[in-house]
Image (cartoon, rainbow, N blue to C red; front, side, top):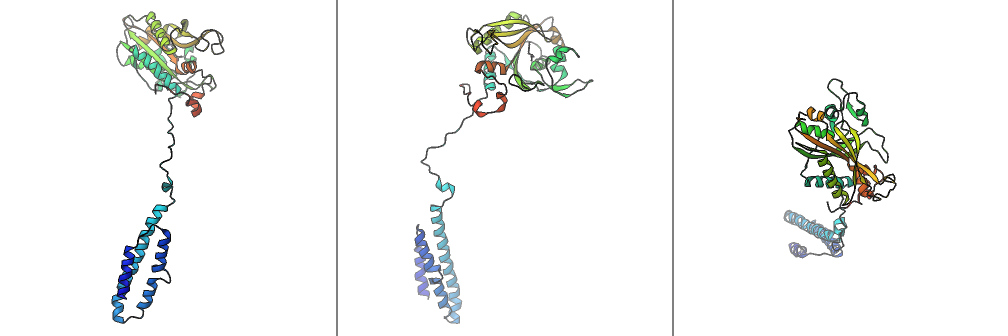
Length: 345
Ligand code: DAH
């Protein structure tokens, strides 16, 4: 019996295969119901009691050896022919292209506006979107109960007669106030940000949109400086030859106030649906900062003067890309967003 076991042991030790059929033959030969191990155990029944003590252990170890060999080879074969997803990856196939996002058109235009003013020495500043009455209205020379407050439909967060209301800012002009309160002139900054108005959503109006505010305060700043700065801005943004015109207007925080039109970029001034056949489109409000606003912000209005302007980023984007429905900007439809690839990315 020992001889046989020694012989089979070396056979098992030297067995190796990558073939499932060969492994099955091995299993039947050693571990099958009519296999060698079964025979050896039959033979074991016939040996003397003394031999039983010796061979019991030997036989069990031999059985374990056959079993572990079987499992070892099986694992190897399984790992080669496994049908797990990893084993099916064909590394020679061409890869899937990686889809790159694109900048939102409003971000592209905001960035362009900011870059132009940076070249003129303007800093960029930001303020909170939840504002108090003082920064959004009172400091900007909107008297209490004055109808000018109705020019902008406000989303109020908290009505408070004593300490003033809290609201979502209706314009970025509130950031002017924060900037002036925080220091002394000269100030030269632009302030991009999101603003909110209580309006029904349609193709032409939305309850939130984006503005860029501009402020320049120093000694001897004049309306001529304002005109020249905005003229330069328009040439840079819309191209040389774009015309500008100023129309008198009213804002509580500027005196005098104006609105600026540019020659329609779509029809080049010939008249089209976009410019309502006038050849001109309005792009911003502006003016000389009202001395009351300077005083409210503890700036000496005898010594300093300044100009301010404010424009809607959506409006400028519409002009640049001829987008006719404001809702597209916030619906996040990738078919719309994908169209705005830019070298500015
Ligand atoms: N805040 C105004 C608005 O939202 C825009 C504006 C007009 C800002 C004139 C200004 C300005 O700074 O001087 O309609």
